[in-house]
Amino acid sequence: MNIKLKKLKVVTDYFYLLLLLALSGNPFFSFGTENTQYVFSGFVILFAVYHYSYFNSRKSRYLYLFLIFYTLVFFSQKLLLGFVSYPGVIGFLLKIVFGYIVIRYVAKNFKIVYFKIIYYICFISIIGFIYNYLGFDIPNLLLETTNLKSIIVFTQNGDGLRNSGMFWEPGAFACYINLAFLFYLGNLRKLLKLHKFKVLIVLIALITTLSTTGYFVLFFIIITTLYNEFSSKYKLITIPIVILTIVGSYTLFQNLEFLQEKVSGQFETSQTLDGEFSNTRFGSLMFDWHYIEKNPLFGNGMHASTRYEDHPWLQDETLGHGNGFSNFLASMGVLSLLFYSFFIIKYNTNHPWLFLIAILALLQGEQLFNYPLFLSLPFIFIYEKYNRSIAYVSQPKKANIEVPTELI
Image 1 (cartoon, rainbow, N blue to C red):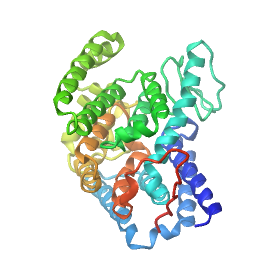
Image 2 (cartoon, helix red, strand yellow; image 1 turned 90 degrees about the horizontal axis):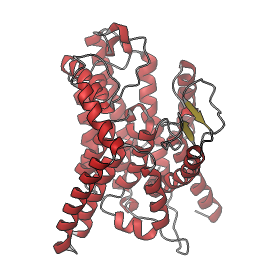
Image 3 (tube, one colour; image 1 turned 120 degrees about the horizontal axis):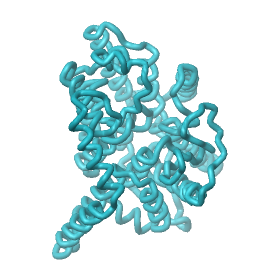
């Protein structure tokens, strides 16, 4: 590959991955209306035609396995429930296809390109957050009238006193930030060594989200990193440090009023709902349990008419569901979650169980499975078997970086 092609590959890697992130929760690229869903579907079909080579080799069999499995789930829902939304089914499958294409193209650069894009998003978001904190509102490019304002690269949610990055709300931004660290479980020391400033900026942005889920998963990452990456070399001090970190984090939780009130308040409220809907994470879990028990294997579908069949007064409401984990189980069933989890456990070579636990924790607060990136996460690890050098961290600027070719 000559120099010009290498540079083009680098630029395209960043563009494709940024596009994947934008279509995974940026309000400017929302799937909220029927027209935007049709535009997205048309775009993905054209994108797939352009990258047709990713669909006619042995390596594409994993994509077909995913598509066949979820098609069977939807077919089972049709038999059990009597109805599925065909546009919804097509949209779901095309999100997987889109994520698959980007992952195949970016290949072994995926993790480091993702981290660097998150860094740039975080850097911009800190500027936007300070601007909001000083009492200023950003311009708004959104056509819909909501509590959101967007300039595409930054979103202001309400008064902007919590940092949403370029996503729909602060908790979602915290999830995408944590994912950048989760990709490097087992290699975070090296990431920190080579990218100290970038890691610092990313951490500052995460702190400004004021996200309870984001803080919890970051704490989880810190504890597992201390134990896994330092215990072999510093056995005598690792355990005391882990204990001190746990105690310190608990003390911090007790003294940060917004965290304690948010968690305790949501839990107490969920105890009084008596089966009624609530868009909090605990309230949604309690509500969804009825539908999980009703159709545990294949779920109740994604369309409101079957998803909320026993609560018809909710079917025309915009609910803002608060728990992505229970919503996915209630919509797609336990088999879908097991299928997804199997490929992460089987193909992720860096602490797969810890990674999966963290992903499930992130889902407690956000509807991440509504978007292409999280739906297609298993492909990142599946295709590592063809690119075992993916678990690297890019070198400083002075180093000669070999840009790998894409998988074909």
